[in-house]
Image 1 (cartoon, rainbow, N blue to C red):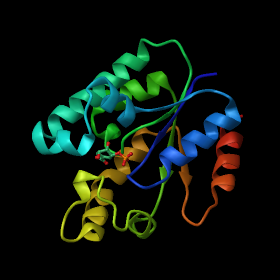
Image 2: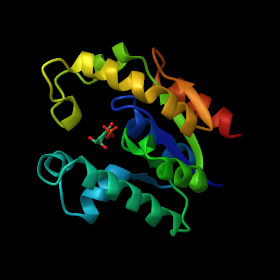
Image 3: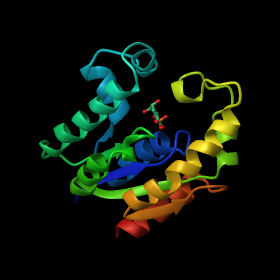
Image 4: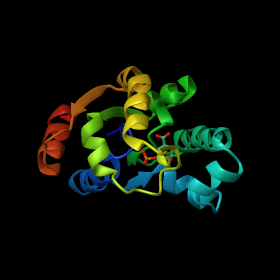
Length: 168
Ligand code: S3P
């Protein structure tokens, strides 16, 4: 079996789906944001504030290069901006099956209400920011994906069943 990689916008459920999927498939779970925090002994929001987004994006690419050298198989949850670099999209495809958890802006806005951990959403009007970012990113997520899965109004069980069917 190949790695199974979850991509999608912040709040689409990558981490929760990823952890549950790893139980079902009996392969370990790995979150690239957490790996970056571990490797660089940092908190992502601080990196954005001090070193800047570009540094974080470089670290994201490094995390994928590192995974490509690792022979183990994982369910991998990625940060919402991982797909933005063409190089990252290429590395993701090399790593395994890329699944895009596609969610509507309203679903995301509802899930991320009051969240303070996402530096890109700390604005006056996060809902507008989500809409603008999704408009720019939607086609990039689609381009990066082998499988597109709509998650709005679905339970985690339904999402996991669908993923298992697509992987079969
Ligand atoms: C980001 C998403 C975040 C994290 C960083 C940037 C993005 O990950 O990598 O704050 O650009 O969409 P999650 O999607 O896990 O929240």
